Amino acid sequence: MIGHTSPVIPSVGISGMALYVPPYRVDLEQWCRWTGGNRDKTRAVVGHGFRMPAPGQSIYAIAANAVLRLIDRCGIDPRRIGHLALGTESSTDNAAGAVIVRGLVDRALQAEGRPRVARDCEVPELKHACLGGVYAIKGALRHLALDGRGRQAIVVSADIAEYARGSSGEPTQGAGAVAMLLEENPRLLALDLTRSGSASAYRGADFRKPFLRFAGQVPGRDGRLRDTPVFNGKYSTDCYIDETLHALDAMFARRAGPRAAYLRGLGAVFMHRPYHRMPRAAWAMAYLFALGHDAADDGEARSELARYCDAAQVPLEALLREMRSGGLDGSGTETPPPDPYPLSQQVLKAFRDGDAHGAVVEDKLRLGSEAMMELGNLYTAALPAWLGAGLEEAAVREYALDDRDLLLMGYGSGDAAEAIPATVAPGWRDAARAMGFREALAGAVDLEREEYVSLHDAGEVDGARRPLAAGFVVDRVGMRNDPEFQDYGIEYYRYLGMP
Image (cartoon, rainbow, N blue to C red; front, side, top):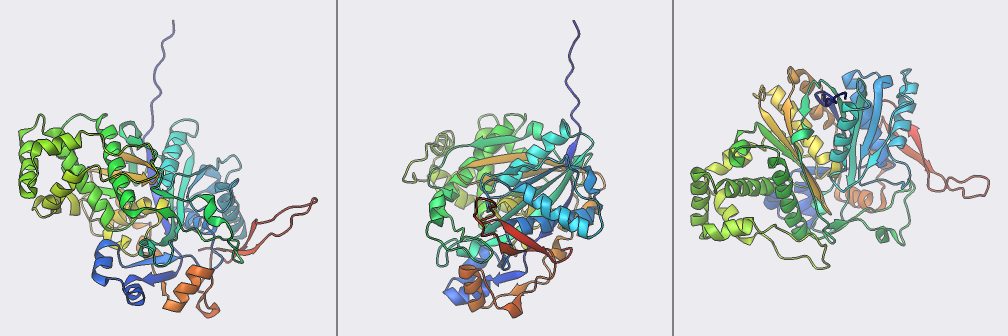
């Protein structure tokens, strides 16, 4: 009988990244003046500004611009690309997605006299709220480790985050895309799926985009409909924290040793970031839960957690029972349930006031955090953007990430989460410096109040303030619906030059 051996799985990961954001920017300090918002609270909780798509910029145009920048910056031969995936929740077509991005990229490459993307390239689109991009990354890594060996993959995460004016989500809008080159023997970051953790549970009224929102809308000249979501902010925060904790539980089930020590030893952590404050709350809670798990066998962990309990006037044993309770029910009830971790929230406040919070939370989440204050919420692109900004900052400032473990935490409302361990590749600084994230933020056009309202509500802005000089824009939308030929609602694009 012939024995079977397991295939050797190659090291796979990210070799390059590129960011594209539209030029239009809303300064949140100005926004607070327009709306009467609290400037100091908005800066501390949300950030400094956010981007908005220009008239005629669909999500496919934004994604294609990021892919073209990646190809140019990384010197990619498009003929080697065997997998081009799009992660988004902003699609305008329910049949096609990533193949539209491929078509735009091919058109630009051909115009520049360069080879097109390989004809046998796979073109999947993945959707699960803000986690679609992470699922696309996992799919690309599996492709490279199996039938796509020796090829390259591109994953582009792209989204347009819109919220109604006057809603609590309004200052957390954003638009942009991050394209990533994935391959064997990566030059930037190796990702270890064998020790990653996943979690999912249905949350009915968390954050949704039901089609009924579109009923009665009149599309703009570029065919876009207003894409404002249905959401419940406090419940969404509870879901984010709860699913993050469960994804970490799944990851730790594959890893021996104390949990809190592992979290303290990480070189950096990058998370889904809908706004500045949320990942900090989730990561601080994750550390407390790690202490709670370790407390059964580790006297130091138990003692540390007890100090925070004493400061919060919460009995330690009551806290530990709550931590073992299982968290939110995943049944998707019509009315959001109460906070599943009220005692933990009290202890969290005491932890924030202590000396350890800076080293455990702020230091782990510091890299790239300032740059992210300028981007707003990018949905699927939020985590990759933070990762890219952080690695570029680490390279420029000569930050010591060599031989350090990193952790990527993805999340998607509705909901699901992923915890993926990573390590920086040898010589990673060259690849990090080549990303040009800071450069991609240059040339912003700050909108005045009337311009913001017009762009938000009607997708239009004064023609004299249209700075787009490169990339793709929607030239027209098809209107034919004849028996002989139909193109009703299909977008046709104009190429303005390499972005």
